[in-house]
Length: 182
Image: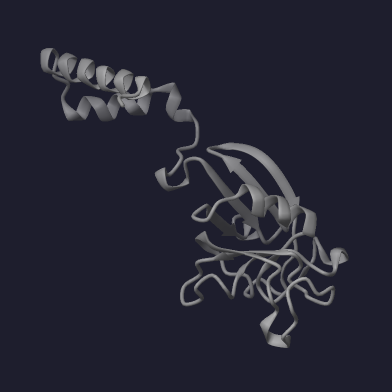
């Protein structure tokens, strides 16, 4: 079945190709036109971050959800006890677990003593398979906003349950430290 949106895009590409055949534009002119365009005043979005992505700032302990460049939601979080505990960089969500077990102390998922709370969204930090660093809930809601974790990003349980429901595996996550750019 041929969808209308693909048909419109196909016709647009054909029209552009036809116009370029009639009126060729030197490559150097294309570069100059892009520099002069007022559209380029907006921040460029890397293709890998088009759509929904998360940004976590360990200096302010804030998690932001973006749709392209539009900020949609913010949440206070807890991060690493010191800034070297939480890894910085670009990652993706690779695992999602309901009622995660806390393996270091063998605490079952759903147990009120479990420090991981009710949900886990694991990050693809190298050599971890999405099970060492992640975004998770908590059994200690008063810790949110502090630097108290072993490196994970901690949210209130209701908030991580919302994320779990709405954020898909493969979603990009940028972890940064804004205090280093000041």
